[in-house]
Length: 88
Image (tube, rainbow, N blue to C red; front, side, top):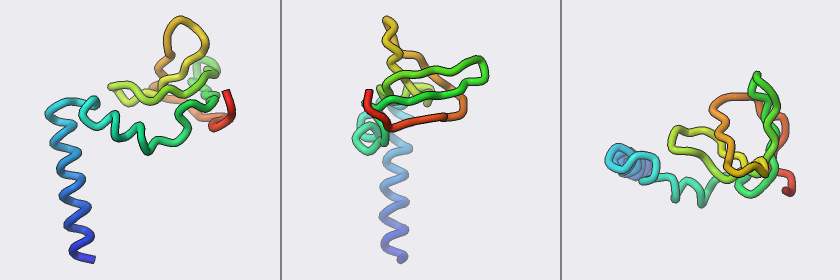
């Protein structure tokens, strides 16, 4: 258990160092390899309305990027996920 905790701590410290040095781009690609739902359809209630689109990842600010079919992705910084994981 101690060796496992030490290994996890070292790995986390390396990710934090990368984030501090390079911002999200330092960990974003790695995060994307393990992220759930990229390429699937999402529906989010933002409080100002409902946004529907295909998940393209997360932004530098941690927002959910949804391709709504418009000319660019919409960044959702907060909201209630109504549906996710469906086929686009």
